[in-house]
Image (cartoon, rainbow, N blue to C red; front, side, top):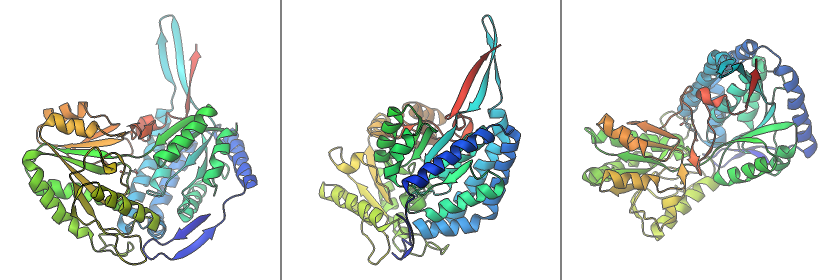
Length: 453
Ligand SMILES: O=CCCCC(=O)O
């Protein structure tokens, strides 16, 4: 069942039944057939349609932001910001896509060849609720320019976002059979991947969902991009301005109410700064105790996406405290029908505790003390995940030295994460495989065909 439930109030607003198996099969047939003609359109035409989609996303920014606020509690201005990056992604691929898919000449030892960059067919996208528009954009924009077609299964709490995105793409001129939204259930995903008309799958979601999609993709020899969880480290080596560093860290962790795969979740602070860092951070997150309506731009603490999500994070906090972690701020579910949870700071988390290894997908900061740079790197890498990482410090050589030793798909200096249309995004270890965005993002579902001249 796809449902719209306002996480700020608990009010159930709409229910939509799942597509039947028959309907899902018909949707697969549509994108398969759609591929036949979409791939033959000149790339400049496909890019022009993607450029038009960028304009429509910009025009409908308020509508999309309002939908996201209602469906998953995103603060309204964060929703507008999310649509801003969506517009940028569509514009980036509209502008650069044609050159990214142009033939690449090869000089061989005994002659010449070209690498022709072709699409591979109809693709399945399985997308999450935390960034309902952005996650779809980074999969869809490059693949539409390349010439693949898309069958999109969105999160079950985001049917209105899913429908609004489909409307924009069709209004922009993407043929109805080149992009199809389907209200499929997770149960239907494995057999969708078995279907020979589907050539690949991109999933952004939980580690568990990644395991099951990767297994099914493997069994069926389908290409697969996985963007899964993260427990990104943020190392503070030194700073000339602790207050600004603390503010930057708190804001980054509280973005999207802590529900970002690439949020900094483990702060690793060198001993000299540790005590003051923790005191200031605990005071700073008190700004995020007062629950508010996410539709009100003044609200600092919005709800999580659902009561189940808030309960799960609260249970993780409780377990950490029971296992010996120290609660330095927050830690409580807010009374009432909404999915609210105070911003929380935990210290003294040790490797024996669940919180040390789990991803905590909510407004919770773990702070670790490291006595040396070496120890900070060891703590950062002591995680099953490897999505992003940040290093804060004043010496550029030291930042680079630390970055070189971090096990992650992305490292940021003196800032924390944040997508850019032209910067490849993705992780290693249990954070997934493949890359999205930038020049690499258009290559994942590409046939790099060698043509020997
Ligand atoms: O959940 C991951 C999405 C990251 C979005 C961003 O940082 O811009």
